[in-house]
Amino acid sequence: MKSILYCLIAAVTAAVLNLAALPAVADSVTPESLIGPVISTTKPPPPEPQPYDGSRKFSTDLGKCDDATLDAVARTDKSALAGEKGVTCVERTGPGRRLQATRAAFPLPEWCYDMQARGYWQGVRDYTCGIFDLRVSFWRTVNNVWTQVGWIDFAAVDGIAVSTINPNFAMQQQIDSYAYWGEVAGAMVQGAFNCTGVCRLQTSNYPSQPMTLENVPLGTANIASTATAVGAVGNANPSITIRFSKPGYTPSLPYTYGAPEVRCDNDLPGASYRPGCANSWYESSMKYGMSGPYPQLAKHLKDAQDSGLPGFRGSGTFLNRITGTDVQRNRDRACPTGEFPYPRPDGKSCDEYPMASTKQGAMTANPDIPPRDLRRTFTWCDMPDTVPVNQTGRRGYSICMIDETQNSNGGVALEDFYITYRILPERPGIRSGDAFTMWLY
Image 1 (cartoon, rainbow, N blue to C red):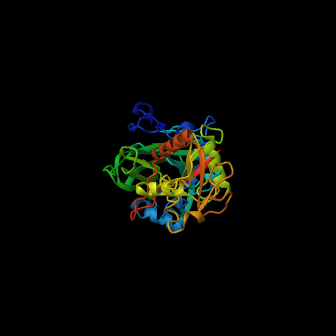
Image 2: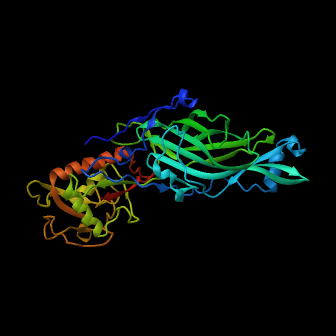
Image 3: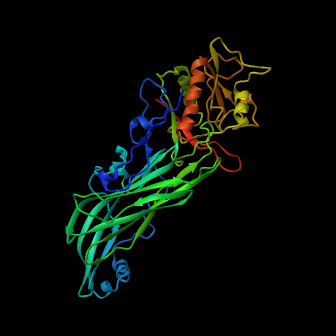
């Protein structure tokens, strides 16, 4: 079963946006591009976005527009200190109205606009977004007292689109103003992008643009991975710096805040060592449909799930990919074929869960415990009487004789999933294998 590898998002032309065009990035926002390998006649559910850990902090130095902050802005400009100019300040606010993208360099998925998710980063394997509500305000001294003369409430709408088959990724920010008061005419915003780690900034295009209810300022960046040598793995750490200004007012202090890291690598077995990137903090799910082309495989997985074995969506447990000789060791223990094999009925083969390609497999999870204390099966599985039936608990593994074509093709679908979602395997002494779950629907 061939991987579903999706086309790159078309670059936004400079004629349309008056911005430098972006190199193509993965089309990560349509449901078809989010579901992974097609394994059922019923369309699999799209991935559910997950919050990025520790992402609620917008900026280490973005405080309130109090006297101390306003004084700090004024100290950057002698005219402001002399009272000849006002100052500009920016601070966090609560969520404003629901937003709709009007000038996106690449589309944002609908879940980005969830009001409950405002104020922090969230994402799927190939897309990250964050919406942060802020207020830019303008101040003057009246009788030596800072007095606010105007403000604009807006949302900074940030997105990062990565490609699991391309070592480049794109970043954008939109400024969506939705309310204002007072003297705000001429307010402007500009910014810049940066990246540290295994990355190189190719373009950063965020010119000064007016802030009005009708205009949506847009900044874009292209970032290239430098982890392209075979075996290379590392994190790219993108960031955004924004600054606000208005004629007759000293610009705000520049505020830089980091976006979630993007892991880039050229260490994916099965992909001919082609470099790419992914949100490794997102825990993907391999999906099998109960009414799909592998019903016996799905039934075995469902029984294994109900018996308490780990690695299923919503259980709080995960599986971790492995490669190499450990995969065969897991197979040999769960489904022996040597001197004492399990009998294979005609047209059937032995299926094991957790899968042999995971750290939770029959041997690698519990190498010092004999199989008789770990194995389990179910009444319909055509296993010998020596294998306990309907055992429960998290420890151990399940085995079942199922249709050999379903077993083989379902295994190909799993390998396809590993490549499509860039699930890296364990490298002993260096890293654990990427965590993922099984999703039965």
